[in-house]
Amino acid sequence: MEPMTDQTNIERIVMQRVRLIRVLRLIISTAVLALLTGIATLWGIGREVWVAPADLVHLPDFFVAAFVQTRFIVQVLAVFTLASFLYLIVEITRLFVDVLKPARS
Image (tube, helix red, strand yellow):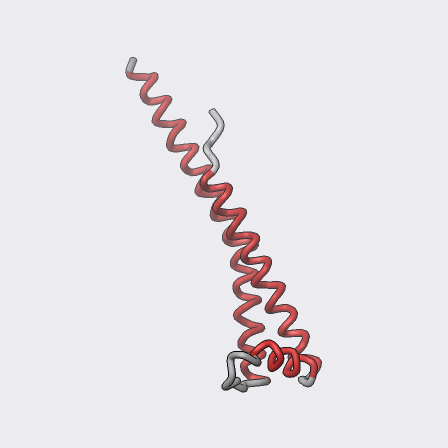
């Protein structure tokens, strides 16, 4: 009976490591890239433009006017920031789905 227990422990350890490698591969390859891209573009936008609107009701109008009337580099950085955060949300969702999915026997 003892070798059967060792086999089960070995299988359990191997599967834990496989899951860990899968999670790390997802985190390192995609989510970190998206996060770093988002941080870099936000930093770039912050260096180019820094204005705080006072009225929250007209906030969408402010952002549309600010986007249209700013330099091209700021528009590009804003689009990259939005794309980066959307991609990050997708990758985090995929990560949670993979982690919470039960392993096949």
